[in-house]
Length: 545
Ligand code: C2O
Ligand code: CU
Image (cartoon, rainbow, N blue to C red; front, side):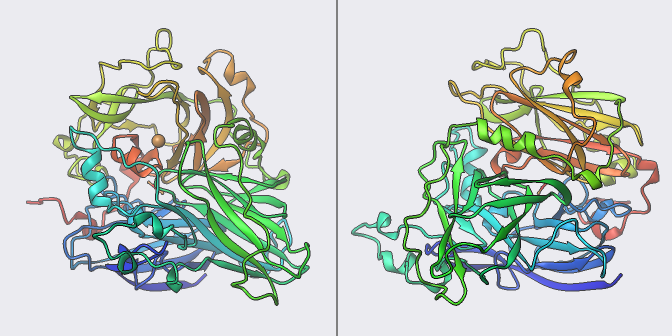
């Protein structure tokens, strides 16, 4: 195994990813940031300089479990103090499993300002994958807003609630296209802020050689949107999800939620005299955002030559059925099954609702909306700082009998809190994510839930209210996939199981940036007595005497 060193400088720069010029956060001048390429068991060292001048930062290594290094998970408020302006912080961790992972800011809403990138971990030399391909490529899908993350977070947390609204565009590997003519105004020199001939916003080009098979690693780091992804006229075979091999299945449309990663195999086997569209569309919300387009370029056609066809129109936004079907279709590859424990020691049901708490619009779990404490949990727990957060744990369930998940609820008993779930070390925990109607009539959203520090088995999905007596009988205890991010579909439930075997404090939250910001998360802690000595570099916010 090797050591891979990176020196990154994080700062604000003007960029035009979708032709509209705005301040974005770059790493060494780039957004998406540099891809981390490594082999299994390599050590990654990232020396990160915060040159944001007035903002803190922290970077999370999404999908990396941080076994033995819980303090380098990069979650501000949970595992570390923020990196202050001008400071340099060194992350050091081992990528212990092959697969497709991500990194992104985990401070405020900086992720959507452009601070994100890919991690690709390959197998050690000579070890084969359970599928064959000629070339390996990565793309990140994202949604993009012209308003700053600051303005958005201020709107979300003000009494006069301002929703972020639908994104202005969708990006494929950092490139999108906004229709600048929509900005036309007599007082604005549009060409100065929005210019569709700017090469920065020319579509992303994926060049393929006819007859070859491509492993395309597709991931999503959207701030809000659930997406579909397709390559005009081509089938995709799904072979990996969140770093685990999938029993292969074929799709035309890949549905993908924020925080998920997939590998699909695509064969360049169509008419090679032309190019094709790769397109991403918003699903699950009735969005006005135009699709994101890239060019699937058959060599040697010109990479900028537009396909002769109109771009595919994408699936119906409100047809939840194929999305649920895809979720259910994802099973562990038959030769790579990691059998789940057949029983669990504890079941935590998390009711996902929108609430008004003291007049503020919030998202809650079992009517508790989450607030980050000033002292990170890992430090507070290790050093026994009992005053740092609420010592009463949040509830393990909600009022199953009386709560109507299908209608708008008053949720008048909503509170905010920063208590955590303490898990017995090595115990097996089931989480039931229960979706419900939000505060708008006839609306239930899709929430992608992401767990830090662990993978979980996805035991099942269902519609309506989870039935604690009968639904567990339908769990897949034979070949469930393991993932780190999973959707809970509108008015449905999702059941997960994981082993609390990683000493540390770990966030579990909705990966929609604004939802987490509005309280949609919890924290688990386990095996704190087994956590080694904390590095002093994570403690910049703690007063020690
Ligand atoms: Cu990718 Cu806590 O997030
Ligand atoms: Cu959510």
